[in-house]
Length: 123
Image 1 (cartoon, helix red, strand yellow):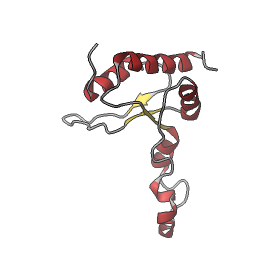
Image 2: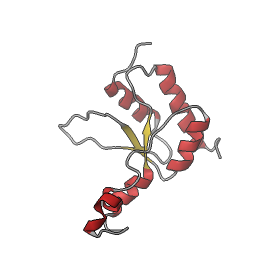
Image 3: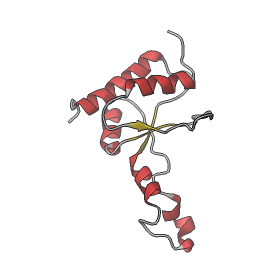
């Protein structure tokens, strides 16, 4: 099998994850995403991340603290609840494996592990 490009990767992941409590970032009509990260959202982020780690799949949690709650910006006086969407996303976002050398069988493995998690095999 050939190596998938980033566009193919996101289409593959998207087609594989039409189930469970997982969503992808939306792409605005007429735009192209550069996908330096492949981020999904789920209410069960931490449990899914642990399941994937145990299965040998590395993930990332980027920007776990919303900007308005970081110490560098505390002089602005924001508190939890001021930006609920940012706080919700910070708790739900998980970066999945995405790199040029990712092989189709590796993608299938990641998809299978996520499917197992949401099907209840990981509970």
